[in-house]
Image (tube, rainbow, N blue to C red; front, side, top):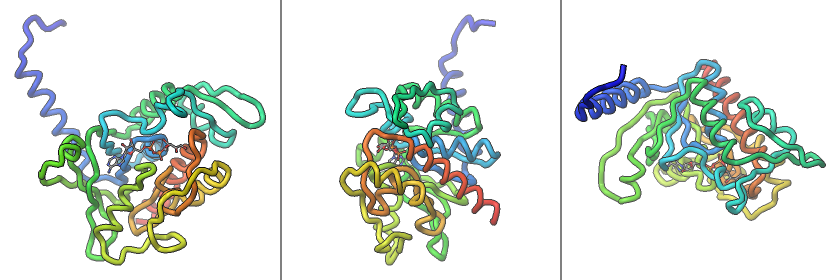
Length: 265
Ligand code: 48F
């Protein structure tokens, strides 16, 4: 039945009440994923598919992180053989280019990876920035502290809201923003890296970067797993550019680790 006369206040009420209902349902999560780039949405999909309660918080108004733009705005990504199953699982067409290189359309990758995460039961909140973490008396991470991305950009002083999570995954890309926040705000915080610090990424070396990304995907601080470029950045590993297999495989490893840790709770 089509609506004959639209009540604008009904539209308002539906939007606000449904937002409130869904957001309230996410106040206590198994896993809070920070950042909706390729690693974060892959992690969220795999955890949600196993029945875990997972939400992704993304500061910008769109999902996909650095994947939309492919390499230097040419909207294609290159993937190595080991990572293609994570794209094919969500219906992305991946073309072989020989010698172990595969190519995919970056727009198709973003749309299908994000759709599959939603279909699996993950919730993705856009426009919400994680500005801090919640900690317990032992300084273990216990959740995320949120503000609107627009408030962050405007640099307004608005107090944030908090969401509890058994585990937090820093999938914020090159910035490793959650780890940086911990470094800044928890005196004496030590990370599981060579120096104990969040080191920051190094200049490009795709072979080394892709070779280590899965191994660097780990719990680097109690309650905090790093995934994707954030894992490279925290460890002081090189960047890899527009080759993405490691991002998907890192997302898978983060999901596996989180599931194992949740099973021990
Ligand atoms: O950068 P991004 O795509 O991270 P990724 O999953 O993938 C990296 C690749 O895109 C590429 C690469 C491939 O080899 O090097 O760069 O590691 O996505 C990170 C997302 O996190 C968001 C940010 O807007 C982006 O969409 N983000 C960053 N900081 C925050 C955040 C924050 N504090 N709160 C919420 N979202």
